[in-house]
Image 1 (cartoon, rainbow, N blue to C red):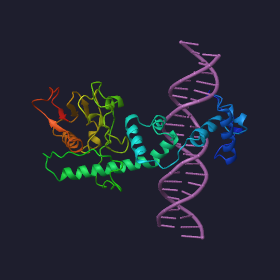
Image 2: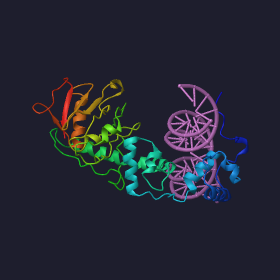
Image 3: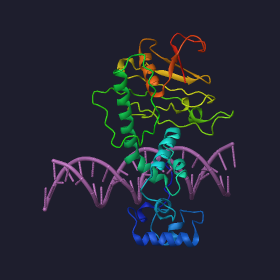
Image 4: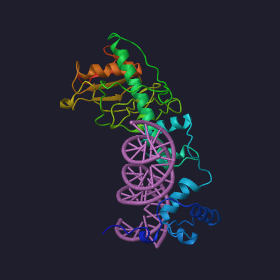
Length: 293
DNA sequence: AAGGTCGCCAACCGCTTCCTT
DNA sequence: AAAGGAAGCGGTTGGCGACCT
């Protein structure tokens, strides 16, 4: 037996709210408040609506401090940063944006911001691949981590021939990525725009690995390189920040395979230098590679 | 001008969390 | 501690307007 419905659906009005209903709900709430019970509220306010519907209408539309539309670049950045940190917890994200509702933020992300971000990231990825293909293998180019969202006025789409790698799984926590150490590091680590790898989980949150020494914790992620095909789906990279200045990564197919791709990626995008020999932590396995930053 | 498509957003649905008894 | 119910939340849907052909 399922759960009892919150109201009698045959006796409640659904669909768009009329100005009269808005007025009735607003004036009731301004005079009496919710009374701590949304379920009983519609009847008291003379509305043939479900309590949940009243609550939603008030929270998302009628509240006096609500802002609609016109998201600023600053708000865009906050949303993107928080989305990368905590995912689709819209109510948490909305608390950082005064006057915005979780529904508003969610709609804005789904209809505009997501596409904007993906386009910018595709553009960046395109730039990386084109620059790396035209430079030697020993390039030391460091890519500046600028704001991807507003970096390009009209980001170019990725060429059709571009093979975009796909994240298979990710194992990390935002605390691991973003929590500063307790030993005098800045209050917050600069959040890097994440790198898009495919369509399913479009962010590649290496943010925590960029920043001052002392960043605490580890950041593990798994991705497959674009060199892979479906038959080598097991190939992945695991990366962890294992000391102040080094991060270890190892790919499943070892040296000479996708290692080359990841080394190129880390170098081009983050300016990481592969580090071997003196100064590098002891290598636990042959496939381990160390990068320094 | 008409029909089709797309994008936006308000509202709904159902699951989870929290609170009260 | 368990159960029941309300609130909170995120995913999804449907209607409407704008734009395109």
